[in-house]
Image (tube, rainbow, N blue to C red; front, side, top):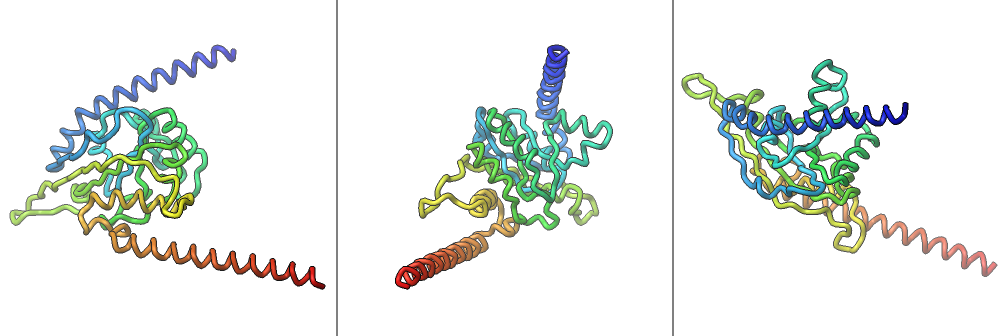
Length: 272
């Protein structure tokens, strides 16, 4: 029975993989047409995405249209996290699973989802991550969650920043011309240079998740116009970094003071 169960699981996985690859190939050709119907779109830097190895595409999130343009971008099939509620909806749950989605409990630390993502990266897969966790309502970059930096660091994966502008104007923030007709928005998808999160900081210490998250989000912000940079505009990044360095310095002074106090107390005890 166990052997039959293993064969059945292997068969189901093979069928899923064939359907997953077929849907990706279909999306690769259909998505450009859909994008053309909805916008005037352009992609820059697609060739920078590695064709092999574990890769994390970190993308800002403006609308549900973002994945359509990501399909125009990717040179190979990928995976992405989505909220677990989708998997409870008949047909939709099965469809997003075929697309490569796996569930995550948003708003809390989901160890199972993070471990699955790390396993995918270690197996050499491509993972799409929206570090903000949800769509931006005003188009600006919001604070990124540390989970993206955590899985990229633990898997030793290559990170590729991707910046999208204009998708929020397709449905939510429509623009109209003088004749009252809807204007097709300009959508630009820019791919930055691949990189890996550093193992040590300037002081030779292991960087904090906050530092790594700021680095990751800053790479996205560098590809965006100033009005989209939000929390990761250069001035705000510099202010946060300085505040963290000051807090770390103060914590170090307190640790040294406590250590000196303990040594003084021990010396006093020995003298008595």
